[in-house]
Image 1 (cartoon, rainbow, N blue to C red):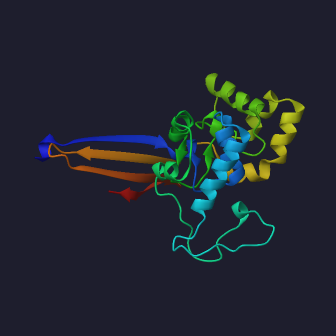
Image 2: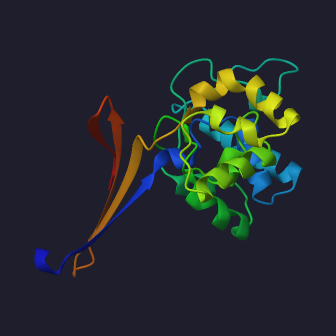
Length: 220
């Protein structure tokens, strides 16, 4: 019976995607806007996602403050209800199929939330502070020329004065958000048997200090 089983494993750089469990409203709205959503639609999607995600898992109410938008309020206690899969995101938002088709492969719910400057796509890079279309174009130029990005300094000579100043102003935050190599790999494995049984697992492999650590983050 096991001889007739089939399995497929797909690996991807988790830090090349936008971590929907780590990103804030502004970042998520920018992401959907870059993918073609109108600004009000992108903002509504972002607020819906964050409101659902930050709601306590035990259903307790958030701390409400008069005059403070609900989208900026945080639970008074308990653990937030984080997304366990990207598919769960589609269940809580009303999104056009075409827009979701573009967004889906660029999202993840695993990892630290860092963004790999060498592998992240334009919509993901545009969620970073200081990253204008000009900066993203400079990143793509370096990649296409076969260059290696090891620091923001590699981009500065390619930027206008305005773009350079905006990027440098955001550097304290970017130093905490960016990575320059693949350190988190998402491995998604699926298996089927002739009898119709199906199983799926997702593991996150993280490299640190030249060591590898694997953690199964979802098994069904």
